[in-house]
Length: 169
Image (tube, one colour):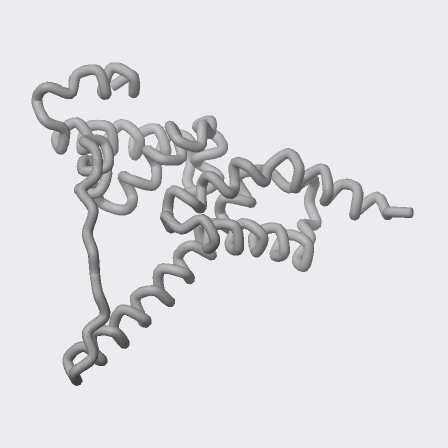
């Protein structure tokens, strides 16, 4: 028979795994790594239970954000190693893909702007949840989102009005 904590954790996982996975997958662009990191988010929650109330999506995405940052740092170290190996004679192959208009505009943004736009539009978080993930006030989150929208519009070609209309910007 499962304990109350185990049942609560199962419900938490069932309700939030798709959102956590989507959040991570867009940032790492690797299905297997995204699955591994999403599982790690729930491992962290299980190993470090929260003393005050139920776990909210903002906490899950904050953990996910930290794990993605760790994955980026590991990737950067590996790329530095590949570069060092390339300079000594080995040559790993690098390929670059061209993305869509939105992908290009998103890639041109600062990380902070990209993150808040993804939280708002891809993850569908409320302003309160975004503020929780970014660890700032709701009003600060609104200002950041406004500035990120403006930066995004600057990076879009002139013929992309439909994209900005969908954003409500």
